[in-house]
Image 1 (cartoon, rainbow, N blue to C red):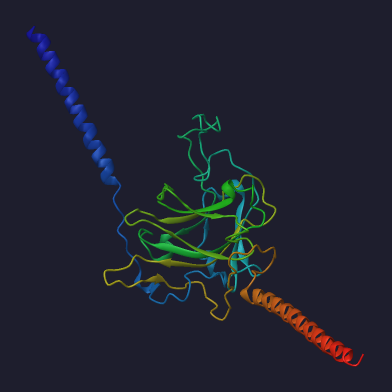
Image 2 (image 1 turned 135 degrees about the horizontal axis):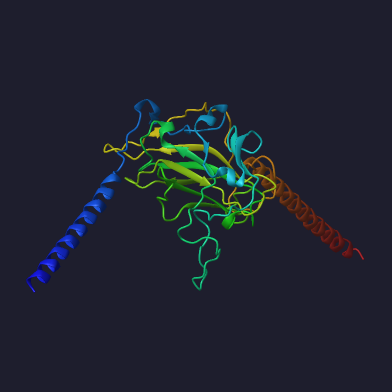
Amino acid sequence: MLFRRLICSAAAAVLAVSCFVCSVSADENEEEKEIIKFTYDESMVSEDTSQPTISFDTSDWENYLHLTPDADLVGVQMKQDTKTYYQGASLKITASGSAPDKPFSYGESLRDADNNLVHPDYDENTPYVNPGIELRAEDFGLSCFSGCTISFYYRIGTDVKGKLMGDAVYVYPVDEEYAHLASTPVTLTYNVIDNDNVSQYRSIACPAAAESNATRFVFEVPVLSNLSSDAFYLDNITIRLPKGEDGKQLVIKNIDGYNANAKPQETIEGLEIKKEGNTVSIAEGDKAKEGGTSVVLIVVIVVIFLLVAGVVAFVVIRHKNKFY
């Protein structure tokens, strides 16, 4: 009887030690995920927010935009474009492949309404892919992007509807392992009606949470089928740092040769615009408006002329009737 008690006590002790070891191991794993302290190179920042960090006006942009490791899966490529731009020149992103055999990071549900796998070949344990382009913190003198916000002008391609997952490009911050750091990405969704972003540029921003260990911003291009034209365009990317205790807003200064003399294109709100090629500018809208004003003016003059002629004819007829 005593022997059995000793055996039970020994087993309990072993179990307790095992639990303690597992707890310590878990704590050590948590400690390994240290928060990256946000720091920046003072020589690369400025309080002047009038110039973008990357303008794409020279070839120097090639040092700061990169393809993601999965870009080849859908044939993503990028190059400077001087025909379709917001200001000076832009970055054109294309994709020539088809849907890969792995799920995209965003835009797709793994299970349907009945909780069945949409694609039996992969489940929640299947690694995601991030085909597209990216910004890397170290290129801008930053230890990480935590607390930073990128803002930019973009224009969606004319052939993406039905060929990109959700008809959109997805923008979000990730860490070194490309783990998602945003539950909801910023979506650049094809729209030609109430917020036209196909024939003209729109501006938008994407933040990274403080102490998130974000080291990259990814522009994901989730291709479903081969695109016959461009996927999207980028122009004038600005990187804003977290505000300091003094409330000052610092940005990464321009590093690729900004052409300040190039005139920015202005957007027209709430119109469906069909024009291809260079972005429609407000000046063209004004011309159309002036043309419409001229037509209205002509109609008013004609109406006034007819009224005057009618009055004159009436007076003449009444005058003649007095003598007959």
